[in-house]
Image (tube, rainbow, N blue to C red; front, side, top):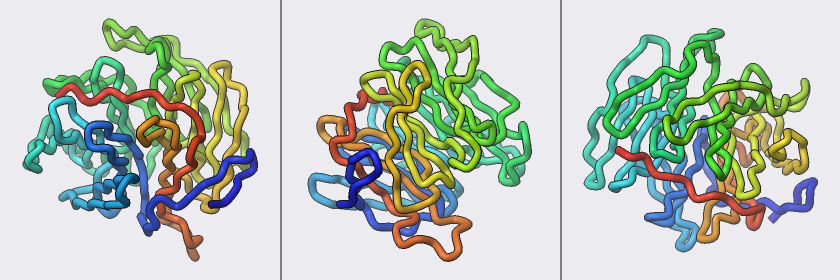
Length: 289
């Protein structure tokens, strides 16, 4: 256990060498932390109660994994949205390959819809999208000028949606209509200053504060609902990718990291880290499909 700048202490939950570890998600039905290694096409699972780890490979790059309401998983893949049934059978929900583009981060809204982001492999400006996908596979394009679609999350009351397009350096906020799933009024909540890294994945806690992983920033930050920076958890790896609360009480902050592009890579780059007792998370809905 190692203390961070704000007095919190991180531990190594799973020592690994993920090229691009991403998307931690707590699955309450199984008591596992799920996350992915995008570039190695891997789905990872970790049971903190037993220490048991699971690994499943996908046939293509996978940007996100989330639990489904009826069991199984939904995947944001290179060529669209896929489903893994409880018996591990794979099928496409939406198959729409675009050459040079892949799925990236995704999140499940309070109504059970999947908000799935994409990006181009060459990170061309405006080459990505953000779409809202319902359980029956219907999709609505929300943003079509995204570069690197990343963190998405909702306030505890569902009235705000937070979103990150990484190269903008901003954490943006929208007004969210829980009845229709529509978002309006996009505006900046906070901006990460030059030299502090780039905002990547995010999660929202029970107080409505937004926790943001900093790629090339070696830290996770917490911003209040007004956009004020009030916590910084420094970490031993530069490429911090995403964070999520997990554990039985949703009080432990799990953090994914990457080692891609680092030469030499620090010893813990690519590992899954955890800050026990970091705060109080909010139970995340499962995908309604």
